[in-house]
Length: 184
Image 1 (spheres, rainbow, N blue to C red):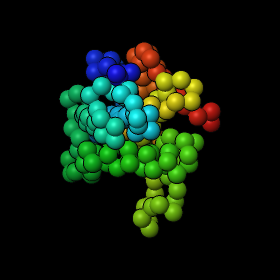
Image 2: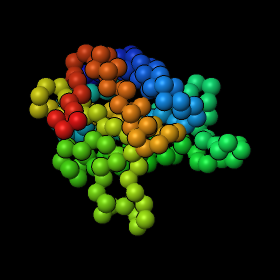
Image 3: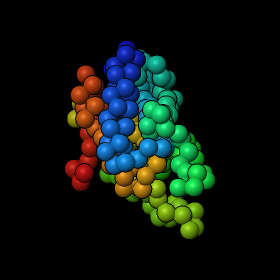
Image 4: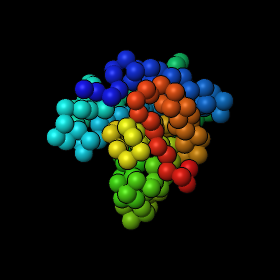
C-alpha cells in the first residue's frame, strides 16, 4: 500500500512547478532549471508492504527536470548571448549536496548550501538552491523525501524559489506532511 498515490504526486509536482516558476518570475529569472526529486525512505519500507510512493521501490529515486520558465531554456546566457552555464546537471548536483548535508547532520540540515566544507573539492563552495523536504507519516516516522532544486539565479534566489514549494507540498499531501527542522 502506498501513502502517496501517483495522482496525488502529480498534483504536488504541477503545483510546485507553478509556485517555483511564479517566484522565479517575481525575481526576474527567466532561464534555468527546476528539479523535483522524490524517494521512499528505505527504513520505512523495510519489512513491510507499505511505501510512500506507489510508483517507486525502496531505494529508488524519481527525478523530473523542468525549464524554470515555460518558454525559457536550461542554459543561462550573458548579455551577448554566450553560454554561461548549463543548469540541467547543476540541479542534480544540488540535490546530492542536500542529501549529503541531511545525512551528515542527522536530519538537522535540509539545504544544499549547508554541506560540510570538508566534503568539498578544494576551491569549491556549497551551492545553494536545493531544499530537502523530509516527509513524515506521523511525528516520528520518516517515510519519504521530496527535493526541490533550482538553478538560474544567484544561490540565494535559487533557494527562495525552492522554498516556494513548501505550500504546495503542505496543501497537496493527504496522509503525510513535510516536517521542517525548527531552525528554518
